[in-house]
Length: 292
Image (cartoon, rainbow, N blue to C red; front, side):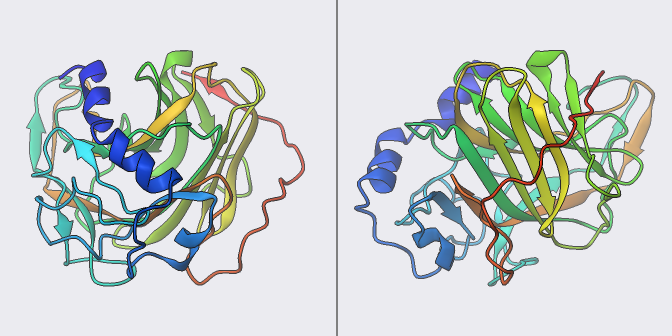
């Protein structure tokens, strides 16, 4: 399925979603995080109100726990084998895979996203918890994780993990695959079989002076003040299970990735149980981007 078709699928329950968010008529779920009552928050899902399995993701659960949309939920069920908080999480199941040539996306699972938001935030924070199974293999090319979609369906930017230990970076495909690497302190690589709190912040200022930041477990790891995310607004997000195969033959075992405690907001969110974050921006730092 082509990307324009995928974009339409993600926005399927727009009317219900908007009425719930902006009119405030939904009844808040008892399972939502406390921060979900903050007016700046516009989406929450910790999967506690959803039935285990692939069949209870598309419906709204009230409050800010809206329905998800995607092509096929069979590889992305609600699971109770892992969780950061509560008893359930969202599981992306990666099959075992062998390849003899560059199959591009051929060794991953699918993708999913919340309904379109209108008006779309110009200042977007996305906090979630993530864990990769002990059998997970990082792609040498790119392990896709999260993206924001603009109104033409472009992914601006991707949050990816690079092979050789899972080093995070962001990539902007429409801008010649321009990459935004970690530039705050020591680069973090993700251990397998461990939960992490990730928060991504993007803000439209003007092309060439857009802002992108990433915190891991509350510590700022990436900050660029000279990003270029174009002029089109963001309108929804995408959780991704794409796994890029390399041009050379290879194979990998079956594995999994879990998401939990997903919150989207126009203000800093912070990690569960942590000190509420300040919304003040740190001093400006050089961008230090690379084009690949």
